[in-house]
Image 1 (spheres, rainbow, N blue to C red):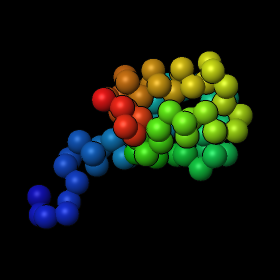
Image 2 (cartoon, one colour):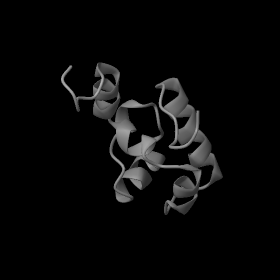
Image 3 (cartoon, one colour):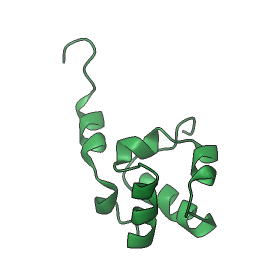
Image 4 (spheres, helix red, strand yellow):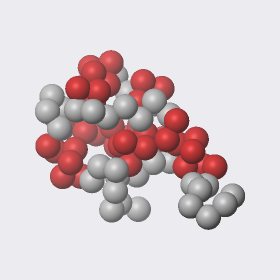
Amino acid sequence: GAVGECPAEVDIMSDTRIEDMGISDRVVRALRRNGIRSASDLSMCDRLDLWKLRGIGPKGRKEIVAAMARHGVSLRGMV
């Protein structure tokens, strides 16, 4: 691609809606209330950001991290 374009895998990841990541409806609703709508949005979060999200406790955070791993997405600053 041209300079400044994202690789294809990033385009695919950014198009993955949180509803399509296998996350429970309760956690999806909480993420949406916090302005997170896609795998790309999640990849911009770090662990501290997850702790700050309203309506998401320890189980929800584990569920989010597991769903991200299944989709090849990691939290910012994590490898």
